[in-house]
Amino acid sequence: MTINIKIENIFELIELIKKRPGLYIADSNITSIQNFIYGYDLACLVNNIEHKNVFPLFWYFHEWIKEKYNWSSSTAGWKNIILQENNNDEIKSLDVFFAQIEEFKKLHPISIEYIELTKENLEFNNSENCKMKTYNPKTKLFDLPIYTKADRVFLVEHSHDFGFSIFVNCKGKLVGNDWTRRFENSEKGKLYTNNLFGTNNNWKVIQGDLIQKINEIVRYSS
Image (cartoon, rainbow, N blue to C red):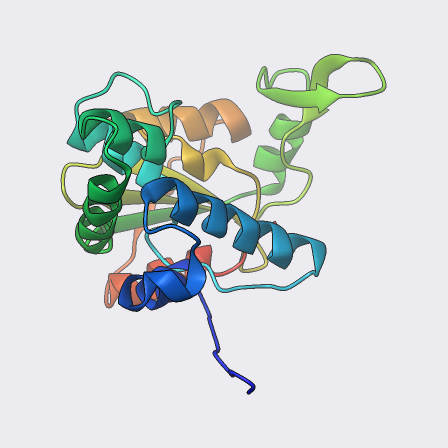
């Protein structure tokens, strides 16, 4: 018997497991679903399968759970935080995971601003004046520019008091991982952008369907 199931994003996968967990995970507990999700991500990576990112990006779930339980850091990861907050009860923690995913999916942008990066912005990012660099395996120093190609930066304000994030794009594709940072206000997000690309105060506000726009911004990742 052939089962033809089309999964386009991580939330569709989680919903599929939620309906019939015994069909997909060995044990109906939170550790098993974490292992399944990691396996799914790895399979997509090694087989060069591009699944669609949708907002909110699943990575933010670490931060969401950190905020939910008032932890100082998200480095323990969503599974370990939920598990510890539920007396290490694996089965109960799986139910909490499904419930929190449903709440997490309600996260949405309430404002989006953007700037068009200029030639001067990119020159600044590639110059010694920019102190924010990435690791260079040849010199074993952090002396390489983070962005060799970029054309827009988006500043997104999240709902649920989740703060602000920046998204760097190149030709409509999300590049880099600065979107993993969150800022408590727009001023700090813009200051971080200036530290990357030099001063650019030509921020414009996006109007219209912000859900559609943010999904266009995060659709592809490098």
